Length: 347
Ligand code: WQD
Image (cartoon, rainbow, N blue to C red; front, side, top):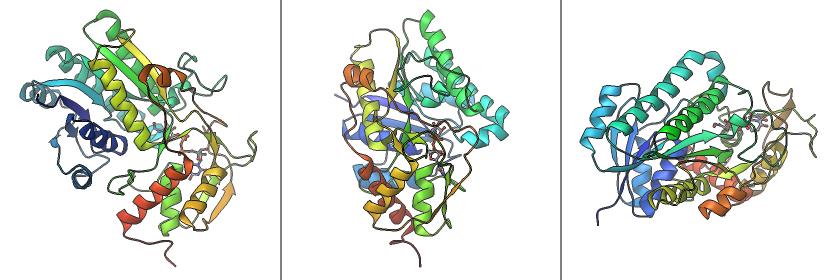
């Protein structure tokens, strides 16, 4: 039987590339679509190094509906779509709100129109825990009220979920799942693929690893006056490979028609929170390096504490995280060293 073809939009991105590797490992045929606005073709070599094969890739901007429609005409056997492609920098979205709303929402709307026209029934949407805003209670359950988004980026994820939910409500042919990611970090154990932010990293883990290589002078810890055990903010960090494997489980739920309704939402986190200082301590342990950091003011918009309830994903997807914080920090460092060709902090 021919391998089932799965469209992966944003397939050369951080989470997209790891999901492509997991899918290929399970015998699926991912077809990648990317415009390389936040990644590059070298990721394909990394995927080949791990899997032995280069997946098919189309360079398409999803704002170009004609090109997207032509893709679906050329690939009539797509049986599901995993939609990662989106602009995702929280801070940048506050500076460029129209670009974020336009790109993220138009891309999704074009995708949904093409799926309807070409009768592609299965959709997994890359959402984010940011839709919860500032939590009223912890751990965060999927039915926690979605709050006012903390950024235009977060609002595009909330609106996208609403669009998919509204479409599923009146189109029973559509089967959709939104996966709400907490804080994905780490890299594939091979060190062949990983997170490669352009410019100055916004997120904690790549800033830590770039500081360790000497690219950044020091890590700034945004606040140690939160109401947490060590004063620094707490997040639910999840290994990107655990996250990728959850996508395979969600895909199987759709393809095997095991959904309880035609639109479902799942939290993807470890179900445990770690503080910034705990992440630093783990990194120093696994890298055997001393990380230069300085405590500074809080970052506007940060919430003190967020971590997931993962019971629904554990139960319904038959999935749980297998990798702990030390494996996340060690794999992130392994990746950074390999991609920079540097062993340890440049003296
Ligand atoms: C984690 C913690 C910072 C950098 C964001 C998005 C979310 C998702 C994941 C896309 C916080 C602290 C960070 C630094 C620091 N992205 N920190 N110094 O803000 O929880 O979530 O990324 O979906 O939508 O909101 O992740 O990695 O930026 O921060 O002290 O240089 O590390 O204050 O407590 P965040 P983050």
